[in-house]
Image 1 (tube, rainbow, N blue to C red):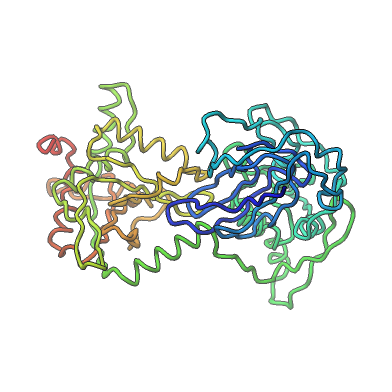
Image 2: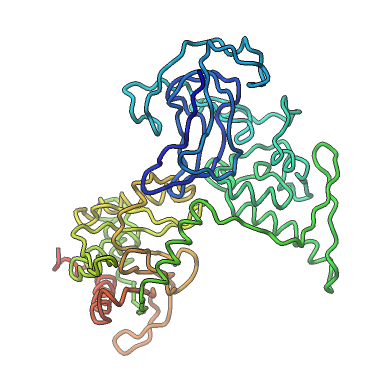
Length: 479
């Protein structure tokens, strides 16, 4: 009996996902709830468990391919079924290990079952090197060997065009983890395998900036060697196997807008189209804020980041000016003023711009808010946020000063009504008591929906936060 495993509804209105990696192959015997494929939706990367047990007959889709809810992911047949070797690509004897099983009804790992039947996860060699259990220490990656089966077309193209250069950035013996399909595709389209790079992310993860840096470094010598514009010359490189391939380093690059970037693009476009936004900004003397941070360290022995303290001021400001903690219901033409403050924190991750949310920030102490913010910061490098952590925001705080800029007319995170930006904090000349002094100054940028409020309310909120930064003790009157 053959059963089809369809891409389930991933929730949160998501209807499509991109295949990151297959965790099984045709001919493998699987059990109910065993993870069979890793997919990337617009919200997160998740492992999907099979609701059926048996023998994998066939897989549908390649890594990097976008699939939609209801499409067939794989087919499973009963282990006792006489399946031809032509169907599975393996001897029939390999498919006679367990009795038929009923579906579990699970959609994601751990849902719908009372006891986990998953074996230790085995990571495919194409992504992380030699297959190993997820909880075992990673052994050194072995030298590349000839594959036991025919490569898929995309894999074959990547292996033929893999290059090595004098800088040692690309190492044919290296197998670094590469999570994002966009990162892998960008490398493949530029003639090399992303897993051969030394990743700068956590645990050696190869992120998009690593691929872009390698592309830039590869092109830089050619640009420096030619002082005058000349017609583009193809570059001949040698792969680890000795085969020679030609790479045109001046070729245009096409980057698909898929997954998270597609959702972000749609949301930002909707924001620009629907929201009549206005921007105000203010330079603030933050010297006292740094002094307060140091005093907290001495008094409690605990570190409080400047961003955490500003987040505390923002939450207090939203209680003073609650209309900014709103969204607009265009269908009913109403302003929905939210009772809870769910503070979004804009974060730059290897998957792109994401806005994880601190739910119930208005109920938290400064210490709890600091700890929640630290948790989000720890997850930011690789963007491993749960889907629930990326929904429900009512106001966004964006610390773009960490990117080295002073200000920005940010785009409101639709359907919210406002966003506050924090610029870099640097020493500048500042007038104090009619005398010139050197102070630590930060620029605050406030963007708000003019349908929700006029400039007076937005300015009131911005100056409230500014006063708290200039004199943190003033917040005590409102606590």
